[in-house]
Length: 488
Image 1: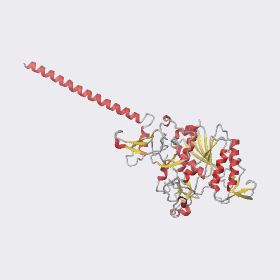
Image 2 (image 1 turned 180 degrees about the vertical axis):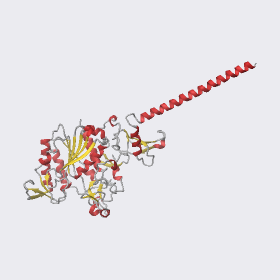
Image 3 (image 1 turned 90 degrees about the horizontal axis):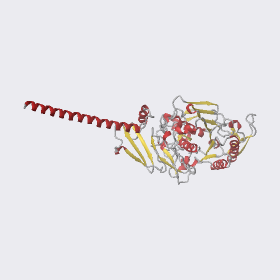
Image 4 (image 1 turned 45 degrees about the vertical axis):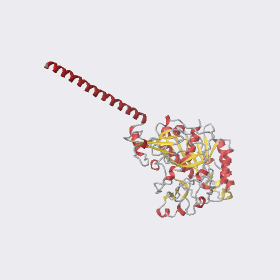
């Protein structure tokens, strides 16, 4: 009996052992399946084309309000915008990690990963842009009629401290400005939407090409903005900035592309043409003389012109009787609009004769406004544009901030009558609402930083002409981007 009992016990022990092995094997199998699924999920979220180091850096840089900084953000814009945050170590399905933000972009549906709060921000310039659908605005879309919408999810498009090429004139936060909300306003056209600015796509359009801004310091303002919008997608060591005389060139070696600025505040010859020493009160122009400047604009693929602010210090313009080269000093004075039309006629004839319409896109930026009198926007306690922290949101209110509409009409009519197709970029009205976006006392004057004592006297020292960056000129460049990518 004992042998039988022993055999039975042995058989029972083998069965129990087999069951234990089976349980262990199944546990390992289930655990393996779980880990495999987690790996697949991870690959879907972070494709192989994105280096791990870049993902970590970008997640750390993004500062999502009220949450962990290590957050990947997905923005879906449809009839509403849903912002989903996935904090490291938590499930992406957690309902408490979702936040809804209202949007006025019913026509766009995109899935994008936002870095540093902006569509073009971050050193990677927005990875996988090539895989996204290119958004082409409707040809008949009026970009310039709409409203300013507060959007701290997609704007600013880059960070001030990430763009090493900004000059002290426009770095308002670095210069002591305390509020930053001026960076978070997005222009929303009434009947359509602006495509998201994609730096890599813009650079591909610019491959082996030249983009040049020509004009005064407002066009230089916009030129600096374009550099910042693009430079985040360019590796360090592959970009450089140089200046020779009136021409400043930002070169992008990997694309053999340049973004240039040419100083010509009146477009035609004047006694203010020196790019460094041009603070001249008695400004004199030669309305029919443009070749000296124009030779520098040839063989450019994208030309962006402007001229306005240098016309505004006198009601009449001084016209030279002769040539600066001949030492002539006699001049006559004619009304500002008459002189402006003569200059733009000279400019338009030069463009029609010298620009290849099959190669070059030409743009003319309308007037960038000033905000000198706070009574213009019903603020009797204001001092110029100083301490203004929000745009004018009542777009139905009649607004007159002193823009010379006569010059606006001249520019619109001249560009419309040209043989060359010129895009007239009507930035004036939408910019008039942005009393909050000027550099004010957070800038430089005559090459020197505004001192604390001067900042305390905004009535004298506030600059209500130029704009902080990031800021309004980025919107102007969104318009350019939309037109440039739409052309085959």
